[in-house]
Length: 158
Image (cartoon, rainbow, N blue to C red; front, side, top):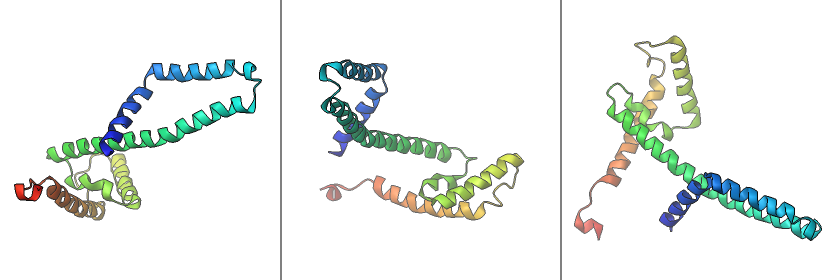
């Protein structure tokens, strides 16, 4: 079920971003507007467009949120790989997504201050505590990832 939903969400998200989809939506609105005089601009005529747009909007929220979450996870994995493969990068930053918003804001403020100061050799002196928290979280996350990615023996697979 999850794979089916994921594929449907990806396909739908891709289709909605195309010009012909927007043109189709505009065409529906034009047809609805043109038929107004035929239906005397009745409550039912108005209810058709209101109900249709409400249902579509409601469903699209879930599809687009799923697609955005998936894209965010993919980008995060790619960034993690780039950080991991770069000897000059701070491995402690790999686990930032596991921190609280307050922790992230503190680290962001430290990096903003560093950006104003320029390239300082001892730039981590003020951010040591926050980076230590990240390092601890990273260690826990790596353990979870290893346990998930660890090849299972044939007995465990059955």
